[in-house]
Length: 550
Image (cartoon, rainbow, N blue to C red; front, side, top):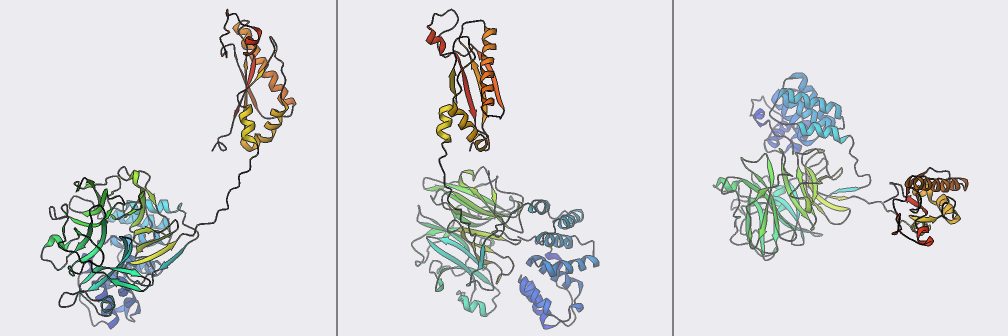
């Protein structure tokens, strides 16, 4: 979402006689059709005759549409004429960010901060710092859907169907025009309406036939309650509350059955003049999330209501997800993933797509940012996965057909050959020799060193980053000091034998003497020679390196 802060700058100004292209450009500009306005401005042969206010409009069109190549030189020319205008630096910094010149972008945005406190651009500056380390998907295909038109299109899933939203006009009798008719004629009032999209094209659905005056921005199915929740505006209404987007609810049968008695949801903005939009219900029907804008929110915030019995709880803000920016377009993906768009976190452009696991939804932990090409330098939202690599989203990114377009993205996953695990015998060898006890005769520090252990250690040491410790033990006969020394001699003798056998790696030793007896043969306790013998050994302790332990 581009920062739109300068409408006051674009008040009507006096003109001399203007060319037809410029008149057309100004007409499109006043109707927020910036790409059309820019094309007409650029095709005009008398741009030099434009006043400074109209030149500003051209610069704004470059900024809004993300036209870096032509936009940056043009905006630089505006700065040369009026360096004090803060908004020029915002436009310049934004386009520099999108062109990958992050250092210049930071400088321009810092200049904007020094000249204006109207907007907080700290997120943009932080984005410039982080983007240098972001890694985009390397192998992908992206397609602008063939059925997008020159106006705004949107997309969603509902009751197992793919729903596409088109902007259509109203005739004098307040009936919805067809998509083709709306494309052929200009209507001062365009309403967003849902259509069923399949291989044969867009088919009207009867669901909202009883409400032709509503502009529908989204809908979601409450399968448990058999109701549809939908976000809509009623721009022709005399009620200012419903002129803004609100959430409505009605009993649902099928797409072919017109809704009746649709009413404002009990928590809609009728109570506090808030704007409610983009309701989304989780797959199990337990959660309802939507975006809300009011005097108490900073931009649009995400709110959540929980189903308790047959009712919904009072909505509460998702404080861990919300920022000082806008959080919008919630989408539940299956039963484990929640997605939303925001301009309040570091991102490529305006609204960037983020996701969070359902388990972390309320705590806002492990929030993940989608990298390019999922996110672009413009607005990206309504992201729906169809499988591990293919998804559709809505975006006003460059090279589209109209305002918002629906795009198909295939993040081609590399084919990873199966890992063939070969049993090299290590597990069996390790299990046999780790913590193995090598026994000694009485008052002796000489014992046999097994060749199987030596061969295995040589074989596996490097591969598994083995570390070896030898721990000397004695029986309780003799003084503690003597036994501690004897245990050390036994461990040292074994280390020497291993070194002579060709194990050149570091081997650590230590002695515990008679402090860790394996039976009850403590000093003063009568035991047989065989029982004492069980306490005379060197213990082999093997450790696998940290990088191999997984």
